[in-house]
Amino acid sequence: MDKGNVLANDASIGNDVRISPDARIACDRLVIGKGTVITGKTVIACKECVIGKNNFFSDVWIEGSLTAGDTKITIGSEGLYLQGARLNCNDGLKIGDDVNVGQQVSVWTHASSMDVFNGYPFTKAPVAIGSHVWITAGTTVLPGVRIGSHVVIGNGSLVNRDIPGGCFAAGSPVRIIKENIYPKKLGIAEKRAIILDAIEEYRTLLALKPFRADVKMLRGAKVSFSSGGNETVFDCDKRKITGELDEFSEDFRDFLRYRGIKFFTDQPFASVPPKWYSELKKKEKRGK
Figure 1 (cartoon, rainbow, N blue to C red):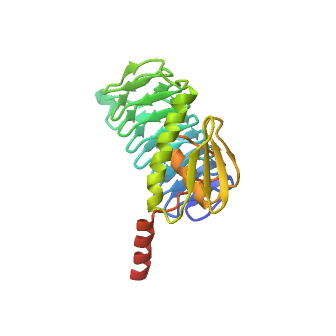
Figure 2: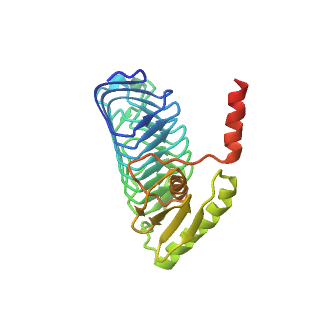
Figure 3: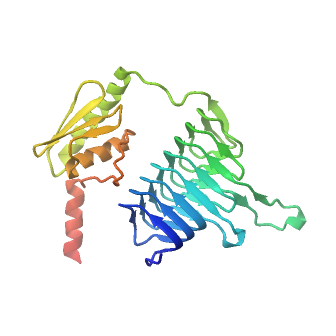
């Protein structure tokens, strides 16, 4: 495939994939699952890159040196990779589903810049990251590390050791702060409290939006969203949507994602811009 900014000898790109014109991709084999968004000045350059569905990348650098040979990265589905993240796959990098990587995070499978004949180290080892993992801003993961599933890594950590599943870890070097705390099973009352808090915040945001909507709590963990005569019901427990998604209910779905309640429909998330932002864009167009 040669589409200007996407170069690959063997490519499979799913439906509703969005790739920014500023992104640059060069792979021998490239797989991108449906609904994935690659935006900003994201760079992907390695022999093999396999990305699942419904991921979001913003100004991310994924690299495997041409000198290293068989460079490969595998990323699961429904993840979020933010600005300045750098993922090195010189010796293979495997990442699971629902992994959130914060700004300025770096993951390394290779480290060497000095003369090894003078005793300086050469390090090269694969990295494996499980599913349902949050690696927060400014963290560095070193070669050879394995991070289990259901893990949160605190800001600015140096991960130089394996991290077991279900824990919160932080520090430089990293240490286990709390064990066996994720995932936590919540009761229906706790879930309703989370949803009600999200609804109250969204109602305040509606004053900034160019549309009107009625959002109310239903029984259990269900939310009714009505706008323009259409009703959409979000079952936050089962993550099921009943009714048609239009641009307004899609805005609410994106807000729920922001609040950590993710509904995936194999379509990229979309928000309706606030009125002040739309006015700025109009001014920008008039000035050109």
